[in-house]
Image: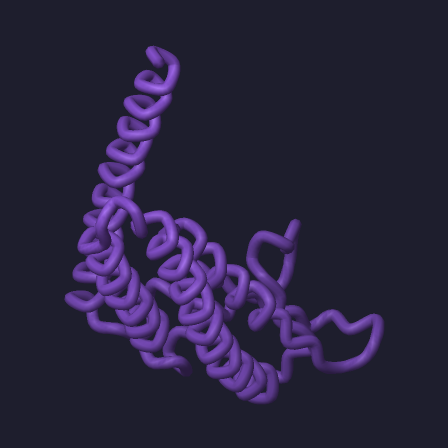
Length: 176
């Protein structure tokens, strides 16, 4: 589920970073590293924290559910988390699009694209966009990195537990 959230946020970043302004044949191209922007700005870190808090809240609901309703609660929680993450990704995308638009005007760029789409040339405006969006402090960035690692470990443990439960159920069914 956490990977899906990251994919949503990164996908939103990718789309937002492609503010195409200007005409054909332009050669003033800027590019940004959307992952770095999301991980280095106050807004990116704030939204990630909100999504993780919502996930923790829903995980607690799932854990508190009795076995008979656990799958139903899980499905509802998954839908709720996806809707919440999509809304937050949209919020982030709109904010980033606004800042990319400002950057395009200031730097007189014709286009800003995702770093991964650049084969050669162009101007890296990642740090400019981070500054425009509000650079997070080193402590905030470090805290977010630690939280992401902890979340990944927790998700891995949950996946291992679920896999173990599925294997146990399948083994019981096979024995009968």
